[in-house]
Image (cartoon, rainbow, N blue to C red; front, side, top):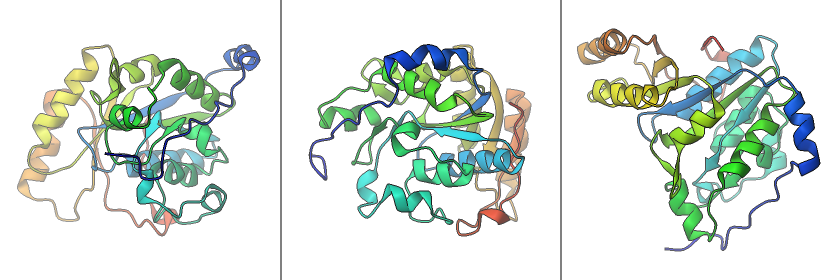
Length: 260
């Protein structure tokens, strides 16, 4: 298996050693870390809705994603054009977050590691001949949060997805220290997967601020209704529902509000 567009060239991290002290002196922005019970369940949309709500409140919002894969699904992607986009259709995850937050961050500032194949970050990195460095990720995260009112971070896959052979997304979330929002589909299987994720988070001291069932149908089935109630009762975590969103019209999105 090879890299679609050749060997991955690691972009230089735009945080110089001399800038570290200045960043550390700034008040860190309060934030939230969006994780999920699996992949392709709408974490990016939930993170975008959270960022949009904060931006609509008049806050300056940073967004961050430790690692991104699947860039070969966007062969025509152009960073400059994406910064001016009014719609999030046909944009990769990090660009969706930037548009939703009304942020001017660069691709490198949002996602310090970006790979072409749609696969686990550790595997995509290995195929590219690099290993994701926790120190690099944390430096980038601190730089992203500096000078903003709030930051929304989005993980890749679930909490136990490896970023490197020895560093998981959960370990990254612990180092970031932000409360979690767990995204889960509303249908059959959601109870088990969601409670396992909540338990995994709590076992390492992470606070779970909310569960978001996404997308919540206009007419939920008895299973979906019971899932919402059961997850709330057994986890003790607020369960929020998010309806399907119009990706062409961000102004039509409902508020998704989590206390930071």
